[in-house]
Image (tube, rainbow, N blue to C red; front, side):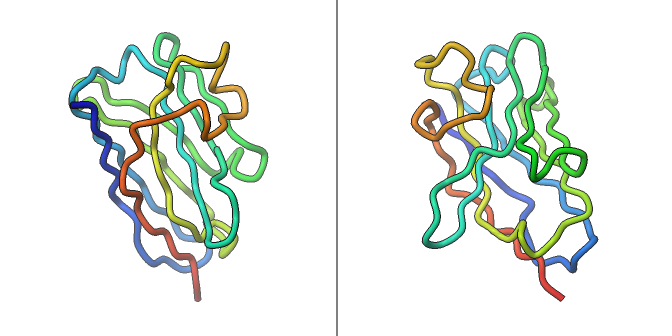
Length: 128
């Protein structure tokens, strides 16, 4: 059974950092593109970063570029999102999801419709 579980969220002050984890079971992350999304109430789920399975190359949306870093630990079958210099605008529920194989390059500006096996999400709140 393919499953992703996010963890690592919490309440931090502006300027602080968090590292989110996305643990996979039932499949090997190395072979798949995996993306991080975030969602705030009343807004659409937004793809913010993606790591390509074969090359480990990454994509970041402009709003997080230079502050967030996505990585993969193949031994632990886990994806990470290191988030630095957090701002209140980063407050959201963060999800990871795996490429469904529908798009030519799903990591190029990842869209929710191209990803699946959504985890339950982890809440990130940035507030002073």
